[in-house]
Picture: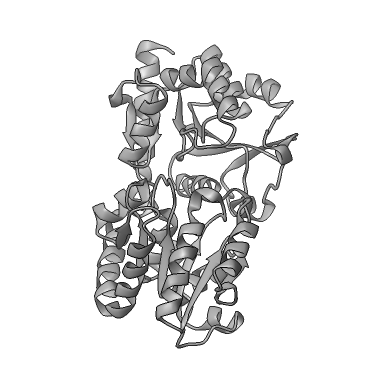
Length: 391
């Protein structure tokens, strides 16, 4: 089977979880009878990451206007016309992109089935709302309706699709929580390396965030709770791990305004052993997102044996509660988050036991290697529907 994965960026450092997941899906599919082909742009393209996928072909298109928020690939249409007929299926990642519109039109023209995996990009939120609504009026809703299946990571994702177009049949939305590449957590770094590199004392209690430093990730909420926690405990540190996606300066200013600037560390993007070392050396990993499809980064912390806390009414909260993998609080309840962080630190053995049980469950039941067939089943069902009904 030949599968085209389409996402405008191929860089975990720049684009975060979507690129990471696409990379891991391709890596697992290389071990099966699937031939992955990645359609992506050249903006911030990660050659080193691509080089790790020896069985995946890449089509890297010159992309313009990326720096102002639009990724236009002038040569995509001609290449897609030639190549889309050779694909068994197209797997579109995210939703409102020029790339997806072009591939949508080519799939319809050549009767090739496609699925959309929006990764939480369906809601309007508060940026480019008018442009998003125009996109949906012109193409978006029709793209959703014409897809053989829509992939949601949680039931929150299902409601996000239906919120854009209530006419979508619920049975065409497949809930598939992202599998975890547990292989990379088999040999964890020794505790202490990250703390030594960043001059963090062995006795300090470290609360970390891992992800893009973006408004949607709710680090303002986390910093407010941390400032109250630091008034109760004088040996706590907050570590923000991730590249700036528009919110870092605000977070730094907020930390200074609350009087905890000297206790908040911004490491920038970390990957590989450095990321794992940071997770191992953390006492708690917190993800306080305003909205989140799933608990991707927090579950990486669980696989590093580190307790987690996330916001409750999100896909991440749904994941954590379903697996009993950690703790949840409602967004912006600062005092309750402060209390929860302190409770975890005061009852650490209990929190570690919960984490250890969740880690064992993930390794046994949710690994990428054991679940990659779930994507294949969606592909096969899509192809079968296309053969019997057409696009």
